[in-house]
Image (cartoon, rainbow, N blue to C red; front, side):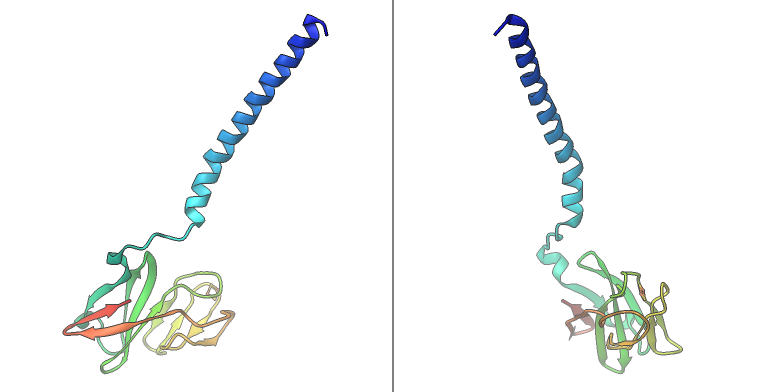
Length: 144
Ligand code: FES
């Protein structure tokens, strides 16, 4: 093999290594943020339970709050009866609104309707709102 062909082979090897390294760096630079976005959130003990003062949820009203980093809602449909639900519509993920006049949750995006228990009453949502456990402890509501 001549010096010229050896030099070309070395050059190709060097460029191949350089291109491979650049590709790995590029995948890491773009892949890591995507991975972090899609990976499940880490849950600390503090995030797992939320305390809400009972007086913030009068009968027939809804109290929106954040539960494990996601929108949630607390409702007192009848005296002493508390319901906690995810406020994320099960259709395409819009945040539901409470319609006190109708006594149901409405999704502003495509007209999904949910009962006070989170069951689908109408519209395109395929399933009920996710329920969360609620406990009344003294004058506080403990969610989670
Ligand atoms: S996102 Fe709620 S009905 Fe479509």
